[in-house]
Image 1 (cartoon, rainbow, N blue to C red):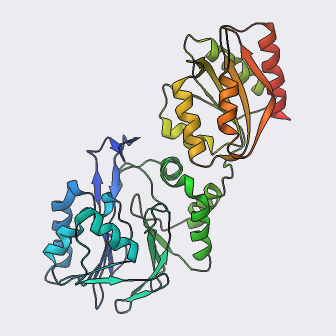
Image 2 (tube, helix red, strand yellow; image 1 turned 180 degrees about the horizontal axis):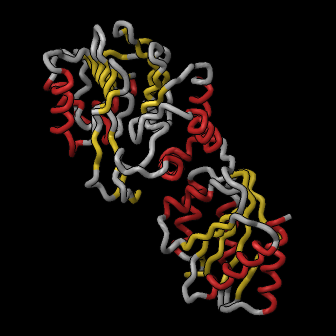
Length: 385
């Protein structure tokens, strides 16, 4: 239990058992599932946790409530890592009302075969749930990142219960910096929906927020301009850093040598921040997230099965699916007899908005030679103009 204020407590769970979040994101430091209780004339529990932690979560709810009974369970998001224990809670606390919107209850019926029609409160965008001196004003946030998502603002203490927004990977006791794991979480899970995140930020623009209580990660209670600023930047698809990212794959090391030469060319031209990712050996979600952090990206890979190397294809598909845009891209390909990797990568990326390509395409035929080294120098010139 973490006390958020005199009347609000956090009763979340640190999951150190999980290996893959949503079945695909590596989480070496686990993940937190956050739930909250507001104590007032009426008591509201906000969201549940993953099904694997039903018993410890319900025990903590019971411990915090003592002799009192909850009046409401507020469901802000129906993804199972937050909603899995709705039925268990409802069966334990039979007088509690279930609060959600129309889409919430449609999903509830799909997941559980129950929509709690006899005890539900259906709220609309902008509705308020009165608890006493506290209240919850609901602000719908469709596709951030499911259609039923809503956040809630508590004006007495100026707290935003932000659903999955402002969340991050990592258990609460993991101690890692917020930005990297929040970026990886945001780009991976929410990144496609920048327009919808912008719409939510505009709705919240006039609200005075002192604390942000997300469904994953720590409660944010200081330097909120930093976190909100990053969300604004990420959802506008604006780069965070100056510099250049190079993403590559290499079968026998020759493409890697080309990448090394390009790094030296760039640094000789004064580029201080060049970050290089071997896509076959680095976490794919981290590589994808970092691509959105830089204004310029170089892709270097081999022709493979008359297309391009699978790890690079997964990376390019990943950034395209998440609305990669407003960037400058350079291409390096390797092919011993029929190089087509650059053409294939460019065709995929041309579906993105406002992606500009370097005029110079570097083609390595098996190994570097004078011609491909000269092309690398020209590409470095374009990247630093």
